[in-house]
Length: 65
Image (tube, rainbow, N blue to C red):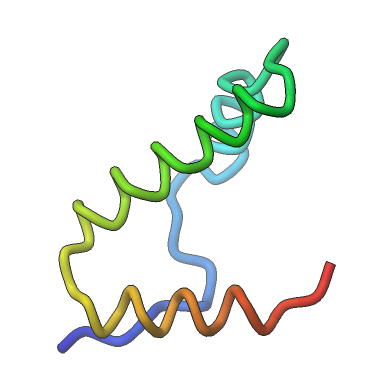
């Protein structure tokens, strides 16, 4: 089992963030929510480790907005 990585681990983070924002540009709330859901499912499939995904859900749910 792999551990969830919570430290910076992304090459070219600024470029990724810009492309992520661009993907949402012009979307209304329902379309943005649908993109979120698709992105979560695509990344979950790529990770493919139920334990890591469970840890990620618990970690994300613990954050307050």
